[in-house]
Picture 1 (spheres, rainbow, N blue to C red):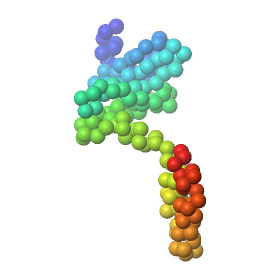
Picture 2: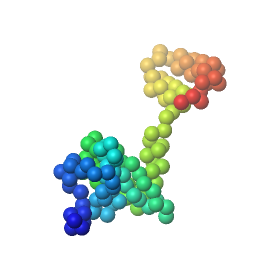
Picture 3: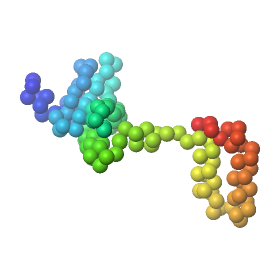
Length: 139
C-alpha cells in the first residue's frame, strides 16, 4: 500500500476514490484531494507562505482535473518563490467592487460613445452628486 501512495494520484484513481479522507499527490507541490463523507471531491494545496503554513483551495473535481490541479499548484509554488502571495492574489481576484467603483469603470468604458466630453462629465457628475453619497459604498 505504501508503494501505491508513493506514486501519487492518477486520473483513474481520483475518479474511483470514495473513502472519505485526504489523499496527497507525490509530486511535492503539497497537492491533495479531499473526499467528503458525501462523496464530493475537492482539491487543495498545503503551502508555506512567508514562513506560515496555509491551505489553498484549488477547486472541485471533476471541474478541475488532476492535471489542472497540478498546474495550479505548481503556479502557486512559483509565485511563492518569486515572493508573491497566491492566497492574497486569489482573494483580491474574487473581491466584489462597490457601486462607485463599478460605475466609474463603466463610465470609462462608455466614455468614447457619448457625443462629447460634456455629456460624459455630466453623467459622472450626476452620480457623484446624487448616487455615490447614498449607495456608492454598497457591494
